[in-house]
Image (cartoon, rainbow, N blue to C red; front, side, top):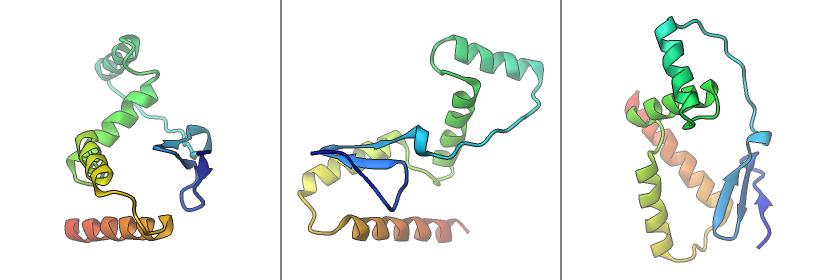
Length: 115
């Protein structure tokens, strides 16, 4: 199956058994920050180790980890569990729009629960 772009989620496409997020279509912002030398050295070492391509990628991962900790984002393990459950549930009769609407509702309920 050819990949199809999702009109509801720019930069997101679905094809066959996979979905991708294209960084070229996602808006990126610049941020200038001041850090203690020790913190800058730590970040530089993380990049030099090869685990991260840039300081920005390292900081982005830290933000994701914090959002997971706060319950604002799903962890990799939670995503794996959801994927396993979805594979086991069979083919849905709902449209992509219906599924996205349900997902948005779940997110809204989580936000209300944290407020």
